[in-house]
Length: 444
Ligand code: PLP
Image (cartoon, rainbow, N blue to C red):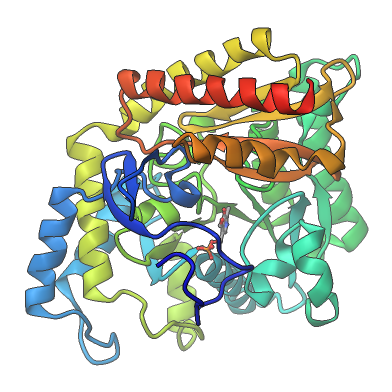
């Protein structure tokens, strides 16, 4: 079956085996081989696979209606999920706009910000500052904000050029500053950029509070977050948190923003929000932003599948599962354990240069020299070699070759939030075996 020619295509030819079924943190292919879903797919399957509560809720909804167009009907699951989501957000983020994925959530956030500026009589505000590196999605609008050249460059003539500031890759810095000073130094790059652009032209600043695939679970020093909020407030610029990967509990709080007590103006959610049970995302903002837009004639934006009752029923059951099983607290506890275990690996493997992250959004980065943090040679193709070695042994990791403007190999280790300490032992066993094989193959 695997070798049959396929009519289907994605980014590239797909040599992977067929998936048969999933159960908890495990996936099984057509031959019965078991894999630990060590990256929750693409940091999506937060409550694991084949969750009975979600499947039951979806089946019940399927028996009633799977689609009702929002211009024709309201639906209970959509209303209930919006109310439930608002209740889990920081105060003031009380209005929810449903979408089907992360790129759509980001596009919606940016268009909402723009329409809000228009209602405020500020049509000159349109620039959205983002960071480099960053990932905000693959549609042309979200890609214009994404700081990752290999994905964006081929489409450059079609993208609205937007200002960028450096992501706070402080782990690469070799200066005499304290962590707090470094955080402030990076935050000031936003202020500088706003002044260069002309504050009256800047609409919003968008950031991943903990980096995802772009920077490999990059966490900024604490001082960064509050200062960024202050700078946005000073210039009347909307702060958009892209919590597509970090949201819905992945970092050990419902939103990563909660770790620093920040209330963004707009939040983009997806991935763990539908947790792989349905294509689902949301753009969440306060009534102070939404009401003037509705008063002025409405939000000029919307996707056909948005808020469909089947996806919303799944989303509601996902939130039930997170709450009733205490999975967000489990993400914090198991994340701390896994991060400690990964950090111990640095004693055994000199080529691990950094371990970082929050909750169960964790990564390690490979280097050729820990002192200088010089990356491994590109020709080694480490990011894909180690992934393949682990995959063969039944552990799925997620990797990228990118960091602070130069190349480097990082690996995300992000199992579902239901993971237990015994399962972390299993992950570490296969990972250690894989790193041994990797070191032996490349003489490291
Ligand atoms: N924003 C962030 C932070 C992401 O990690 C992603 C996907 O990886 C997206 C946006 C885009 O989401 P999607 O692939 O669902 O469009």
